[in-house]
Length: 454
Ligand SMILES: Cc1cc2nc3c(=O)[nH]c(=O)nc-3n(C[C@H](O)[C@H](O)[C@H](O)COP(=O)(O)OP(=O)(O)OC[C@H]3O[C@@H](n4cnc5c(N)ncnc54)[C@H](O)[C@@H]3O)c2cc1C
Ligand code: SF4
Ligand code: SF4
Ligand code: SF4
Image (cartoon, rainbow, N blue to C red; front, side, top):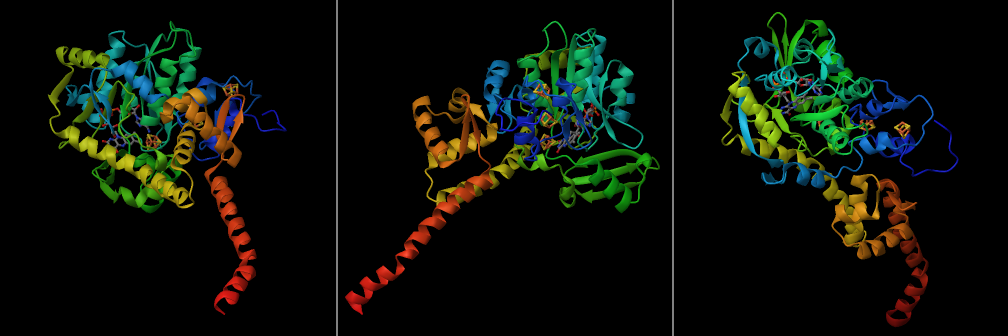
């Protein structure tokens, strides 16, 4: 990185580093390295390995910077049902592959693998960005170009993987005109940004279909596999046949048909830092969201169908005899509860901070604008006005006040929030000064009291 003497607010790797990586918000999705060959990933964080031309792509497509979710949803899914924690959806279904071979390697009903193979064979896509693993279960991004490669990626790896790094192969290969992405909700957000505000010409590398996987949290390979499975359970990674998380239990299935289970809540110390502030359970920007929440038989996949494209592919799969589908019925309520539970996790932290700021006597509109800015990681006035739902004139007054208080910095029309810890210190400092001033008057006040009552 070119050393800089002054802090820059130009969307660049420096800004990505400051607002996402250093704040432990990076979900290691791989998008930044996927869009820029100057970025590499070292197992934990993205690193700049060459000079940064400040094109801003890594910052723009990172799922942890501003994503116009509501705007995208209106463009993509309008006219379908809507629920606050789930987003838009057409319907909820249970699905199972009719191919026994796929069922034997899939995590649940093999819906994801069956759909992708069909999409590839019928020419809907030329490849798919997926997550495979080596013999030691180390997850690896892959641009799968054949049914065999899609099958090799079947099954859940409960470890963070920079799957979107494989987008680089899409950009580099002119024969990949249309691609599908399978990812966790954070990766889905990045994929949708890349699709809606494409950085490549539309005739090449178009993201055609996005499948989201339900997700409460994900884990580090070192913590879940090396510390827990290998060291604590004494199972070598090469002996693992399948890993599963269902109904709060993490289970390891070995090649010798041994099963060992642990409670997921006991593994929370190994969960990825960014997961604690994540609120999306289903991947609300996906065409189709798939999981096992709400199933009674683990050999079926549960799915939320959102887009017309997803409806059509599923209909075609049933007609072609590749998939069995039944209506999800009440399962949607189970998924909704799970989604609400996840959203509430961050709400609790926000509520507490909100309470602290209120107790310091800070006006509620100032707190609200600052919180929205924090969530966006920086924005211009128009973006902020839309996201906070505040008119630009009122917002201007609030922003001037926040800037004077040192809660944000304005640079070339771009507002960047000061860290919450600094803001708390600024406000606590003011309170401290006030108390000091009052205490300086203690003897005078005492004097008045003594003269009057003493
Ligand atoms: C980390 C993680 C957490 C999950 N948490 C939940 C949960 O809390 N509740 C719930 O209901 N469901 C959860 N799921 C989804 C569930 O485990 C299944 O993936 C889903 O039911 C699809 O099953 P399937 O048989 O249709 O998929 P398959 O046909 O087996 O295909 C699975 C697909 O998942 C992709 N994949 C595997 N590992 C990863 C990874 N680490 N990152 C991105 N993509 C990956 C592969 O590319 C593959 O294409 C989670 C999945 C993962 C990977
Ligand atoms: S994508 Fe652009 S801004 Fe980001 S590191 Fe690469 S050159 Fe710099
Ligand atoms: S794009 Fe993904 S990997 Fe890169 S900084 Fe953002 S969250 Fe992390
Ligand atoms: S909890 Fe959120 S940030 Fe963590 S892996 Fe799942 S979708 Fe990504």
